[in-house]
Image 1 (cartoon, one colour):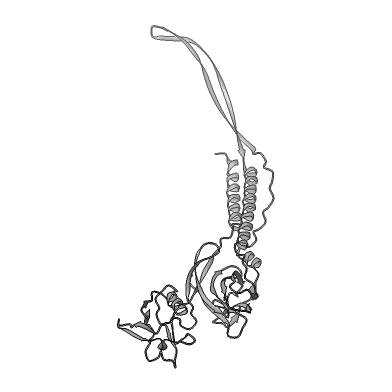
Image 2: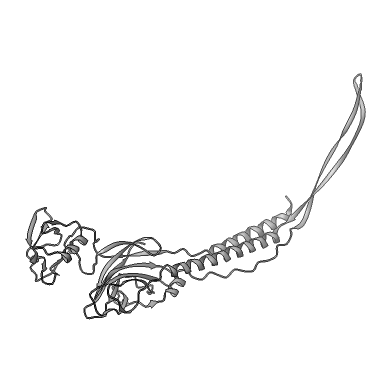
Length: 356
């Protein structure tokens, strides 16, 4: 082995390692959002009582864990069906199924106040909301909690992005009551419930830059030099003909031929390889920057909506996204408050950060 080739290989391997480190450190950011989970039963789940309000007619007849299986003669399959039937029809009785399987039919005034539909027993416990299955703006499945804030009824879901500065993305959908004359959305706020601390809102653009941060700028392309000759190896080949004659035990004759010598040079590719790797790293980093910019632009464009604060139109449907940046030590649970602008018009949904 030519001794002059050893430092070339060592140099090339060191350069390759440095280039790989450069490429890895400049990789496009992968979005690592984790869904925030609302607390409460699914709206398509059974109508199981989770709370009985004290000092109401329900206390003596309804227990936590009882399941409402019928309103009048109409079977109840889900929580959503139960509330739809209550809002559209009048029932005089309801049927409970106890934990031991026994059934009991009672007058409706043991379950709610007929004149106002105020509930004496609820499928929701403190801090819970009905949970619906939805999809995020990126098409991923998620769970959303239902809220009622004044004249606005809708859902709230959330995504937690664990970045250098954490980002919480809140998705709000809502329908404004058709009968309201003065419909308002005053505010949407986020609180860390354990710390009782309000979390600072940020803009969509700031959130996009935190989720997809800027990439390191690439170096400069360089000219690729030719390899440098360091030594040579010679190979000789002889070809020809031999005219022979035999006389007894002897062979004699003449030979005619030629010898060809080929010289193969040996090169040092250190500078050539260094330039090629530099240009490759620059090209990859430029592509990373373009891809990261596109991800950021797509993130913002997918989250356009008509959510706004102030006066809303009767029957209007709203959709929008809000962003908050919680400090690292505030880890939830989080509560989203929707202020409908009037007295006793604040709805809330609790969102828990689950998983690693």
